[in-house]
Length: 252
Image (cartoon, rainbow, N blue to C red; front, side, top):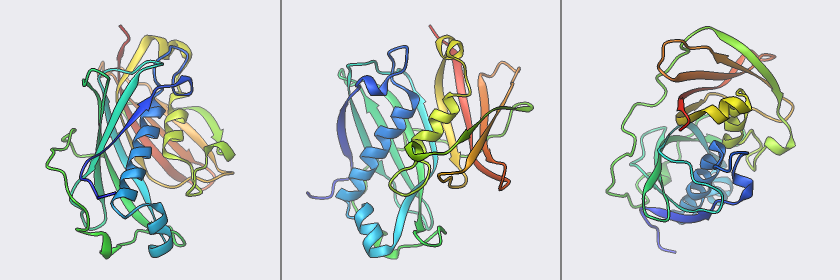
């Protein structure tokens, strides 16, 4: 298949991708983004197989911001589109939009990826992939600097979560979508009934592996901003695994 600047794929929102309200889970957005990004990388000749076998490297998501105007429901069909930006020295920006069956944009996202060596797990520059793929003449859907957020109040421990078999992906570490499930479990079912997440930004700071235990902390903001901060820490190694900022509003 000829390399394309914009890659798209249709998804059916099945029962495994919705929560108890019948709406798509937040983590499923990340699964869809991961799927189309992987397929597009293969189309561009920089997919998992090429990166592993030729460069002994792998793609790692380090930042993601998602804005959601509407959550699709069970049984809907959606179209996910993705395109990369011009590569920088150590990071690669990739954008996403999701459209419903009526061609309405219901979610937008922008993300930052890096390449790491499979053995050392350190950043790696793979010169041969720079400038080798076509670029889309599209603007970034979310024009903001990623990663600039801090807690809005004191942090409290919500729960501790061991990382197990079902959390680990083909790269041998905690999958990016699982972080979102961990974050969602910081809230009660009543919270999920009464509030809607309008946006989420996650900074993936360190890898987590099977056998690790992640302690989840959440702040208690009272400034009326609707912003909630969550972070996950490997306390045994005193290592920040991720930090996240959510924007919530009352469900209608």
